Structures are given as C-alpha cells and as structure tokens.
Length: 171
Ligand SMILES: [Zn+2]
Image (tube, helix red, strand yellow):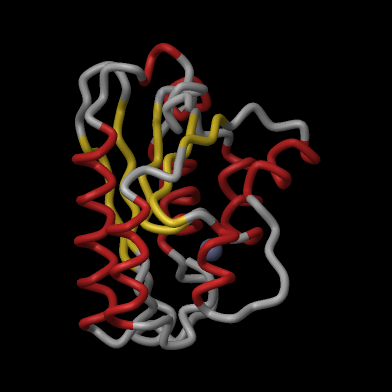
C-alpha cells in the first residue's frame, strides 16, 4: 500500500511528517485541557522545515465557533505570507479539516495538509452520520491543495478516545 504522504508534492518530501503530526496531537491535548475541542494544527515551511505557526482549538475559551485551528492558521497565513510563500507551507493537523476549515485553506491556497485522524474516522468515533472529506472541498473548488494522511491514525484516534469532542465539532 502506498504511503499516505506519497501524493504530496516533492517540495514537502523531506519533512518529518510523523514528528509534525505528533506536535499537532500535543496541541490537541493542550486544547482539550483548556476545555476546548481536542484539535491542534501547525504550519511548516518546506524550504527550511521551520514551524512558522501553531494553533489550538479555542471555540469554548474564545466563545467563537470559528476558532478551529486550521481556519485560524489559514487567515493568519494570509496576513503574514504572500501567495507564493503560502504554496510553500504545509499544515499538519490532528484531525482532517472540517468543510469550514477546508474552505479557508482553499481560499488562501496552502500547499498541502497532512492529518492524523481522517474525517470519516472522526465521524465514526462521534457517531455522526455525515462526513465531507476535505479533498472533496478542494476538488470541487478547483484548488490545488495536496492531502496526505492519515499519518499515525491510532495516535490521533487515542486523543479523541481520551478526551472526547467537548462540542469541538470537527476541528
Ligand atoms: Zn474546522
């Protein structure tokens, strides 16, 4: 079976995907400890492997349903990086982005997203009937955002089993 990150563009090939996914899971646990949904994400620059931003879910502590980490990173990236620089950024995220966040990622045209727990798996874990995989959002929008994952899905699932969603609502 092909690696879940095999479809990523070559510029992202040398990054340590598993280490960055582990960092996203640490951020997810930190969010849960604060009373937010168990979701965390970071942005890494391809050319030097630097972590340039990280975010945790903050929907409860900020009382703001938009505060999924992926959407927050998307709009911060749009403020701080040029379109060319954003194509060189890859997001690592604990759970595959929900449709709101995938829309934001497509809007600002990040280069790629790698997740741990897939959207379909998260829907199963929380007994949800519906699921819209992020790749469908990118495809339907005509966006060239590469998707890699699931990477370390057992570790991602464990975060959900340990702490639950706490109304974090998909990311
Ligand atoms: Zn989201």
